[in-house]
Length: 310
Image (tube, rainbow, N blue to C red; front, side, top):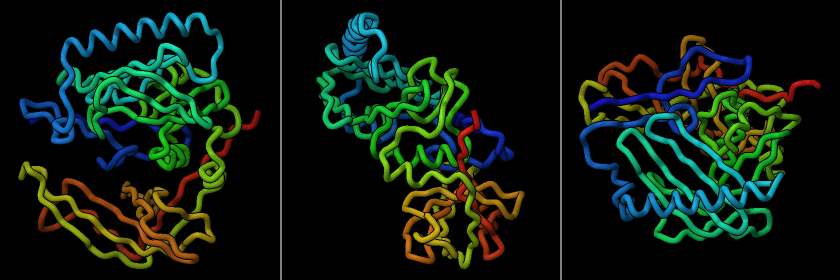
C-alpha cells in the first residue's frame, strides 16, 4: 500500500514546523493502492465514461454562459483539493446549472451535474443522479463567501473549518491547493479585511491568539492501524481552563504551543462558561509507548487572523 500525505502550507507569517498527520484541514491522507474503493464510495453508483462525458458537456455549456455574464457574484470555475487523491472541479452558473467532478490518483471518483437554485443567499444543488455522501460526492448547498477580490463557496458544515484555517494560516492561501472551493485563479487575488462569513462565524474570528492551559488529560481510545507497521492511533480527552466567556466554541481547533517540539491539534468538544473539553488524536505511534502523551504541562493556542493594514 502506498500512502501519500499532503499538508497545505500556512500562508501567513505564523508558520510552524511541519506537523504530524491529523484530520481534515490539517492533512489530507490519500490512499493509492490496488485496493477496493473506500467504503463510502460504495454507497452510490460509481461514475463511468458516460457520466463523465455528460458532466463535461454540461461544463462546456456552463462556461459559455459564464463568458457572457461578465462579473458575477458566484458563477465560475472553482477548485478544491490536495493535488493527489482530492481534485474537485466545480463549475456553475445561474441558468446552465452545475457540473462537478472529483478525480484522484486512481482516476474518477465522482461526477455529477444538475441545476442551481439560489435561496436566501445559499446555492442549492439539484443533481441529476444520486449524490454520494462524503467520498466521491459533492455539497448539496454552498454559500458564496466574498473576501476582497476572492470568491469562495463554502458549505455550512465547513464554516468552522474555514474559521480554523484563518486562525492557523492556511487561508488566505497563495496556491491553488486547499480544502475549500475557491474560484480558479483567485489564490493570486488580494484579500481585504475579513471574509463575508455569516455573523455567528465572523464573530469567532480572533485578532489576537488565546492561550489555553490543559488542566487534565485522559486516554479515551487506542486503535491499531490495519497495517501493523503504522502502529496505533490514540484519542485523548483534554480538560481546558478556558470556556465560552473566553470566546471558545464547539469545533474550534487549538494547536499546541508548549512544548514547542509537539505539533498536534485539538478540537473543542464541549464548552462551559469557564472551562471546556477537547479531543486530540495522535496517529501512527508505537502501540506500547507513544512518544506524544498530552499532560497538564501543555499549553494550546487558538491562533488568530489580523487583516493586513492597507
